[in-house]
Image (cartoon, rainbow, N blue to C red; front, top):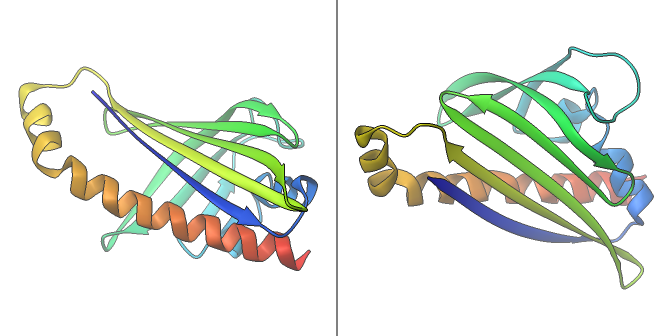
Length: 152
């Protein structure tokens, strides 16, 4: 049982500047208003294996999720994964040159692992509402990434 959504934001900055923003994990809480805090769990530059804990407040509830980079191809694409509450989350960022700037496409997917009957019913009833809220939060993230990249 998987739910996926894709959003694209055109940014008036080159891929290198956009990459600098999306790969700046320690600075992400300062860039993205939806992130309360970040705790790095690994050392070294951004790349496959980089791990951190990210705390966000959604629907009035604060939640911390451990995340890691599963793929990085600077400055073209990166994939970030997280496992939380019986779900496997994947965020894939793809950067493409367009009109002197960059199209940043974010594909977000949530897959419920071993869904029970109740979780299937819950997803059928509330999945669209949850994904709508997720799309709104992701669109805000993309807007804030664009503002930061365009200011560099």
